[in-house]
Image (cartoon, rainbow, N blue to C red; front, side):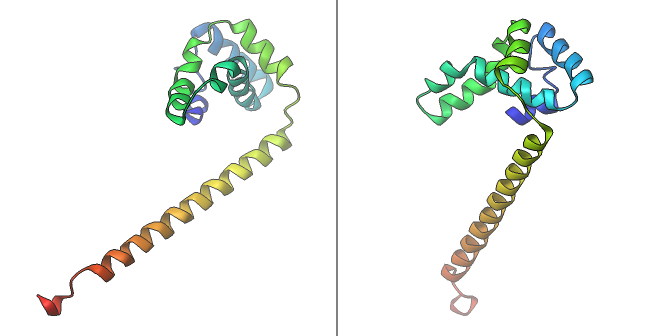
Length: 130
């Protein structure tokens, strides 16, 4: 869901006044404004997110959050003042960690699928018995 926020540059997700501000900032600040905006949306709604009782509720809430963000002044103020510094090196480091986690998850999935196939193959009746 957050990845889709970035892919759409918040255009289909935020109300027009908000995404126009994000787009203006994108031109001036560069791509790190996308991270700032996502963090600002999470920060503004922190109390709601922390009140979620399970993962499904949290996922549904995260999908709905940007649509409820109507105050572009609060969004931009939070993105630039409340979030604090967001150096490109920090963004690069976090992206590298995320890519590593994705690679590890993919490797675990491949191993799991391989193990499952081997298990099914060992339990399948042999052609000699048929």
